[in-house]
Amino acid sequence: MFEKILIANRGEIALRVVRAAREMGIATVAVHSTADSDAMHVRMADESVCIGPPAGTQSYLSVPAIISACEITGAEAIHPGYGFLSENADFVQIVEDHDLTFIGPTAEHIRIMGDKITAKDTMKKLGVPCVPGSDGGVATLEDAKRIGEEFGYPVIIKATAGGGGRGMKVAQSAAEMEKAFMTARAEGKSNFGNDEVYIEKYLTTPRHIEIQVFGDGKGRAVHLGERDCSLQRRHQKVFEEAPGPSISAKERAAIGKVCADAVARINYTGAGTIEFLYENGEFYFIEMNTRLQVEHPVTEAIFGVDLVREQIRVASGMEMSFQQDDLQINGHAIEVRINAEKLPNFAPCPGRITQYHAPGGLGVRMDSALYDGYSIPPYYDSLIGKLIVHGRDRPEALARLHRALGELIVDGVDTTVPLFHALLAEDDVLSGNYNIHWLEHWLETNLGDG
Ligand code: ADP
Image (cartoon, rainbow, N blue to C red):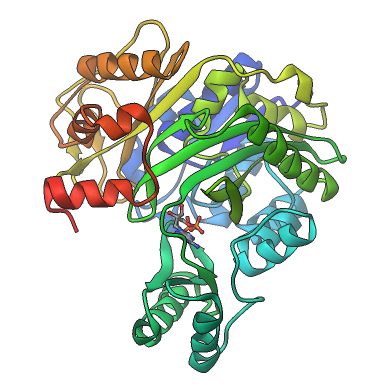
């Protein structure tokens, strides 16, 4: 096992990794920008290294600075968290070239899944059901129009390198194809340096269901059921739950096995998430994330496992601590993402926290790096905390969420907490009757957000 690991991230996820490492008796090194000198992850880690100025490109994304921090502190492995360098195959290669261990999958797997066309092709060959659409990239507008006719509108044009909801455009009809095609290409080029796009049938009422998988890198893999992340704004998740209210035990076992078998066959290492759209009882693969997800705690809650601990174990060469039969679902968990944003337009709202009180009690977990007097810097993501609740069943989890949100105090900045209070008064949310478009419609109707 490692003696010391470095965490190449910030905020709640850096703290999350510190916590797992400490319980395993592993020393931690935090890295931080000059804007984060007072951050909680820096305070909680055993050591810290300042790696650059506030801009992410010059600090949390600076590969030389992070490798140097490892050399200086003697850290043997790097946990990337999510975002930043977590899905950067070149970074993984450099880490390995320096005889350090990357706590995550191989550069090759990250590369395959990071290109959505290659990912889809790979998954199809592994027997995973995919959204109907173009066979690979679509180079010209003429081809795009032909595919639109073939599959029938609406269709979605997606940048193969896209992520975070960027590089995707819907064409409702042939008349909208030119603009959607050009915009998706341009967004792919400007955000990800790659203008290749592909086309999929646009599903009109699907749920977003993702399967958590975990592999040992030696051909053994398990699944940890699904998360329903259908409540989204601009293709970004805001509320996640496990198990999915619409998924039966039989469906879970079947799709879970397809996913576990697929990653076992490619000798996948560590945590991964296979994302699907789910409509009329069918699963359609959209992409695979080769890292820990923001919403991993709902899975941890219902299975009683520590996914970060497991990532570290497997990266160090140890066996996974569970097998498929050990993984039984217990109850229901919900996570809400608390962002420093001002409703109704979700404008980022950095600033000083004058008072912070985290909710507690049975079945409540608050993953956050906030504290009284902390100043949220304006340079990074607006996620400031995740509130996760666990109950014996969905109604109990919802009641607990309501109770815990009532206890939470975040003064000094605007947050998305009022959104969740409002959602918990909606019959559709209470009954689990929603799809990926539900929240956008609700926001438009109730907040005029559009
Ligand atoms: P990103 O990598 O940017 O997160 P994804 O491919 O994971 O992109 O898609 C994000 C979200 O976009 C999905 O959860 C879903 O809401 C929507 N989406 C993607 N593909 C389709 C599709 N074929 N039909 C309908 N909605 C889609």
